[in-house]
Each structure stands twice: as C-alpha cells, then as structure tokens.
Image (cartoon, rainbow, N blue to C red):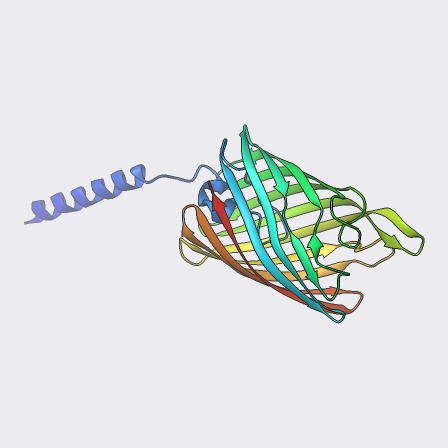
Length: 262
C-alpha cells in the first residue's frame, strides 16, 4: 500500500512538473493582447508596437462637461499598422467635435505618427512615439498650425496581474494668448496603474499633469479611470470617466470605445 501511494505521489509530481514546463511563459509585456497593445482609453500611450503587417484601430466617443457647457468628441480614430522590427505607423483621424464650447461642429486636424518599441522584455517595456498634426480642419476647429508631440513610454509588470505604465510627453503646439496666436511648449507626464480582475477584464487608474493648456494659460491635472474588456482576441471594449482641474475650474468627461485588430 505504501509503495502504491508513493507511486501515485511520484506520478502526480511528474505530471505537475511536465505541466509547468509546458506552460507558456510570457516573453513580453505585450503578450496580453489588445488589453496591453491599445493606447486607449488612457491618455498615456502603450509601449507595445503592433505586430508586423497587422492593423489595429482605436475608436470612441467622449462627452466633456465644464462650467462653459459641454462638447462631444465622436470618432477619436487612431489607426496603427505594424512595420516590423518594433516600428509602427499611425494615422490620427477621424474625430468630429461638436457642442456649446466650440463655434460649430467639425472634423478636427489630421495627424500622422511613428512608434519605435526599443525595449521588449517579460517585465519591462519602452517605446518612443512621434506624432505630427496638420491644420487640415476649418477655422474654429483647427489648431491653426502644426503640432508636434514626442512621447517616451515606459512600463513594468507588478506581479502576474498588475502593471505600471508611464508616458512623458513633450508637446510643441499653437494657441491664443495675450499677444494673439503663438507657439508654446507643454509637458505632460502621466502614470497609469492596471490590474487584471479576470483574464478578460482589466481596470485602470491614471493621473495626468499638463504644464500649459495655452500660451498664457495654467496647467491642468486629470484623474481618470475605467474598465477594458477583451470580448474576443481581436475586439476590446472600454468605458472611461475622468475629473480634471485647471486654475480651480473643474470639468469631467465620460466615454465609451473599442479597439479592433485585423
């Protein structure tokens, strides 16, 4: 009887050992699929480049309310294509904005971008994003001049379920100040904490600081959070909400969106 028990114990140990050896180990933070690859719904960007010769599309709708009124942002399109060797090309469009805080409804400026993922390890990730927008929209909706953003994206795993991501953004933009339209530089660091509640459901909380909102305007701080759900390996759904403060004035927004891989 003792020999039989020992045989069963040895067999169980052997099966467990073989199972552990056969279980795939993550080789990258990006192994989490769309939950890891998508930029949205956070303000900061993912470190993950799209796989070579594949498309990923990110789209959504967002309603922002402040003391001046409300506006609706519809589309929020960001289309990404994997070029290979950690590079991807991006198109930032289309997005329509309408509401009481803008003169009239209209399609916003078109943008293009390039991502380079320079670090891709099981617990660490790093990337640069270069984003360039052009004044393609009509007056009243357009920024009126080109805008350039350079991001440094960093991420690390905090155990098997949680992760921490950071984006340090430098923005060269244009806006109206006391001396009319002029260019200005702004810095926007953000940090997001994510946690997998289930293999398909992820929750996040993010803090974002913006040094300037216009040439002579103060900065802003935003606290946002939400949920991402991987409905299928190629489709992600998300919901987001945020509270923002600038010069003591509060605003908030609520949004829905999705990401799709092709």
